[in-house]
Length: 237
Image (cartoon, rainbow, N blue to C red; front, top):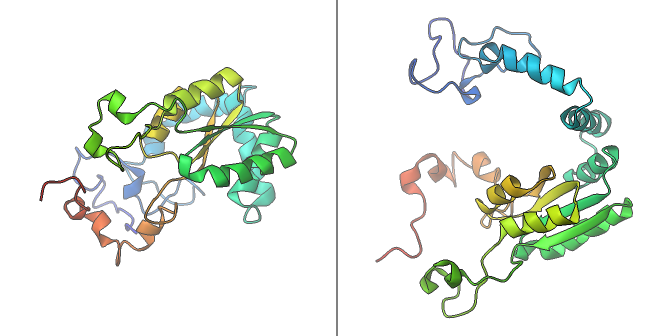
């Protein structure tokens, strides 16, 4: 973990022109406000924004209601509820009824269980699979050789249509279940309802990407050096 930056080094690592980033701070005084803030602290440079968002959260806005509901879930059930239970409870606290699920094809069994959990709380779930529309990758200009199984029909993921289908249905909260990196960005961008992620896809680590950080000093030290990342399976030998 980075050490605190002292007075003798008031600028962020990399010099004055480096991007100020909370990842460079070892104090994290913003939580308890019990230590001196480093000179590059974003809290110090965003005082106007802090005042504006404080007013927003204290208003009758959707943002204020959602922030308070999330705080209630944390306070009431800290360390006692799984993420699944927290997600269901948040939806109930917000008074939502329609909960959309944007699911990866490979996680539909888990999505069926999630739908059952939501129904048990008198919520109405609607799952939309990533392959909705069944558009072949070749129809989008993707070479057949880039398919996982060349020579076969292979539908592309369609996160924009997933979002549009849930928008049309009128979902009040959308839950992401293991969408591919990048596809999750497109879904979030096109979703009209707020989005929470329940499962983050990691095909190597059993959908537990934080494990790579835990092992960054041993088995997965390569993540700290981009040049050591696995080479493309399609690279010419």
